[in-house]
Image 1: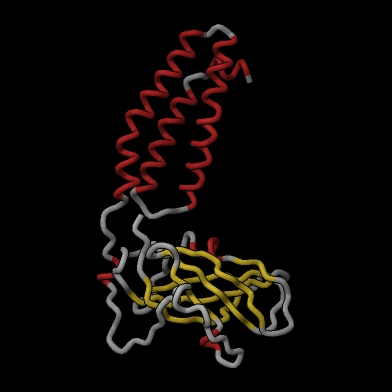
Image 2: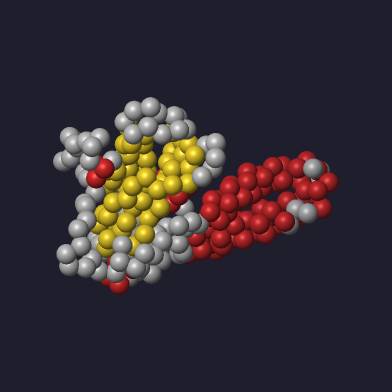
Length: 239
């Protein structure tokens, strides 16, 4: 490792630059799995940089150490203001909700609030009560509970669609974030308890109708099937 650091000392400051660029881009775009990858790589670079400086100093590579340190400081300073601005203001306004108004006469449910909906009626004979969506700490952030009769072991997860045009919502993250592993059950029971998920399309208080579907993936056969669906009035999370 020592020889690699001495020979390629400039690589880490360069990766720091690209990592901060990627982080800044993630604040101004719809989140995806690449955001997590960029975050992990950036954290790794930040940890390795001080290690490389120590190795350079021990081996009396003064100029390489000074250049690596100064270039890293300059890169952080140059990107600090854009990063703070991107984090505070996020992307431009998302007009998804205003473009998909809730049609007159469409029946929908409102997310529940813990403070005002403590006693929710769950009826095993009424499939409309199987799925309960709760409002999270911010608009666009939600939690869901799910009850169902007997099932084999597998995974419960959500798929969401805009109700009028059937547009998939937060497709790249929603299924993974909402997934819950469940053991085999032989009677009606609660399978999911306040599992968090986020809908990104739209802005705060720019409401539209979303069809939230609960799906099940069998652990043995890997086959998927839809268990139930319910239309809710939702809003998007402004990043």
